[in-house]
Length: 273
Image (cartoon, rainbow, N blue to C red; front, side):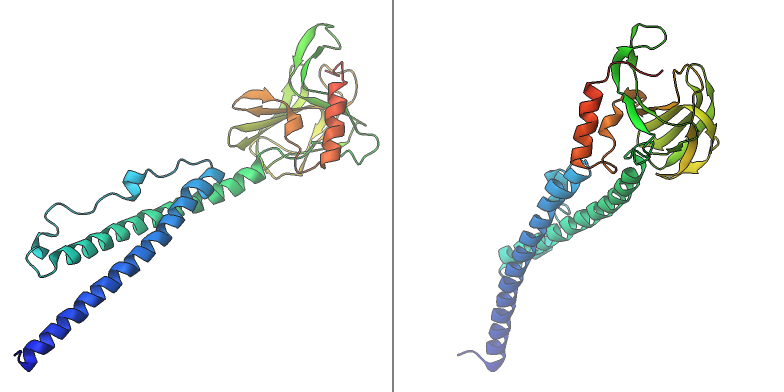
């Protein structure tokens, strides 16, 4: 017959074992929730922000040395206690890794917001002005003066002298000066490997080193440099190379407007510069 004290100790032991089983189940539930967060992190958030997923060996690396649980081996029900302790340690480490990942995602989010505000996204002129129109597209065209086929590295928009020219994204003015062939020219660095160039201006409204925001007036349309009429020559450069600006008007044009502009660009034969 067990003494009252022995009976109490046995009940206490059974209660502790029951608590360990409950703790194990709770850890497994938390682990499943964390795995769902890790999956969303790797396959949604990091995809959106073009960031590499965290390697599984880092997320689920073991914790502690081989002797970390040595002191628990001589306990009753050692296997259950060691298993629970190991799961808890691994879960704590995985949660720490996930917390650091969210800190990184927060930084990527801020950078993405800055990038979306900075990359070219509007027309350099307002087509609501009836005197302003698209005149020539990006691509190989017959040069109006040399009469030879050359790469036209931007798009031309014609209009009246003095028509406002707008910055197409946030950035910093690299220069506002006369360039051979281009006449009065403004170059804006938008960061994220993007630059835009505005040529043949009549006058400037900015100076080198000045910060500008999308929609700011940076100058006025003119006929300076090698030009056959009042217009602005607009270029978008990515990684230092000219790309077709027609792909960078998504904040300004509806789908129908964009289709019309593409059709006009495809039917264009000669540039104004």
